[in-house]
Length: 184
View 1 (spheres, rainbow, N blue to C red):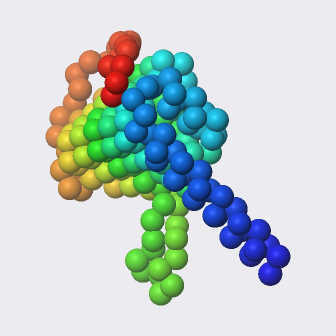
View 2: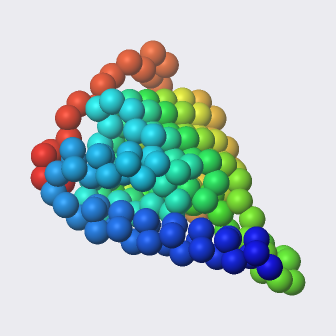
View 3: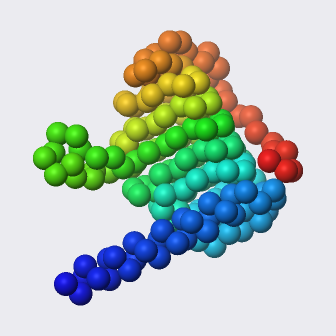
């Protein structure tokens, strides 16, 4: 009984933090947003940027490497581990989930699995990444794709569900994404 009460209080506090971060996400200053995201538990590497309107579920489990950009309106799920590497470009309205309901369970129980996005990955606008997926170094996820399985290194995927549609062709990736626009 006591454990249930403490869990419920913890859930309410987390909901309050997520609510506050939602509003922080609309302040037109990268520095301000990064400060508060880090304050509430996100690990964010040097030079990484989250554009306005990004949403988070449990920021404590989210790690973003250096020189990565998260686009406007992105959803990053931290209910399980979410690890985003260095030099990763995540476009507008991308949704990355690591928790869902088990539709085969009679109680519709929640299940989760970590998501890993390695270095130099590009995820196009409105793509959806589902729980348990690893997107390997240099991979590209096309706009609107729904990724349900791991994506191999330097592979381009697209569609619903996402399937390989090509290869990136460049093996020696070493670019920097650079600075994002100030008021995004």
